[in-house]
Amino acid sequence: MRKILTAVAASLATVMAMTACGSNAAAPGAAGTLDPANPTKVVVGASPVPHAKILEFVRDNLAKDAGIEIEIKEFDDYVLPNEALSSGDLDANYFQHVPYFDNQVAEKGYEFEHGAGIHIEPFALFSDKHTSPDQVPDGGVVALTNDPSNQYRGLKLLESAGLLQDITEDTTALTVTDAQNPKGLKFEETQPEVVVQLLSDPKVDVALINGNFILNAGLKAEDAIAIEAVEGNPYANILAWRKDNTNPGVAKLDELLHSSEVADFIKQEWPAGDVIPG
Image 1: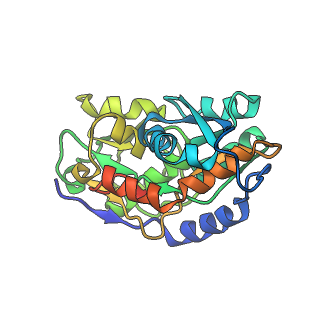
Image 2: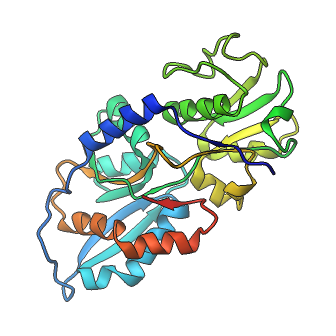
């Protein structure tokens, strides 16, 4: 299928990059070198792919020598990992990008911090009916997430693909105007983990799918009919922890996730660019 690469809006990139820089912090409890003979346990919540897979690589290849023991708890949605972190069931989580993190902290009042970006999973537009965005008919149905940070991301992708226009940060699927939506597209909002299931729905023309669910479903970003560009992309996935964290293993894990070994593993595991380090 023909792929259309699109840059995220420059203004958004600037704002989010500034936000990300302001939110980055070294994990509290950092205590220098840990003891491999007496490893510190770190319980981490993660999406199955790619996050848990990356954590498994760290656990099996880097953690022992670094003095940590990693326990991975997998989550299939975007709500429970932050709830589990807030309640103390996790020491850290690794599943979300910076804009989602910021939205959840503002909305739920979580006392969290996060490290620098580890990887990017480009957001993509898929279709079982069409091979390019210009084939989407007037009145076509778009399946997309009901998560605000990712919904805006999806609407901007539709704009760059020529299906919408003049999308602003306060635009949602419910408030998009006729002027912004000249093709009269109809929107089917649902949970992000459900969007990929609607791809095969006969009434759906296109689906905007988050990167980890693309991988979970066995899809490939290279088969999308439109996909985000990586340059200037503010949606880097990060490790998050509570502000009152005292586990020194969290800082060590964040350090390992930014290692050259992990970057090389990501490149080797997803050579087509479904997951990109940095």
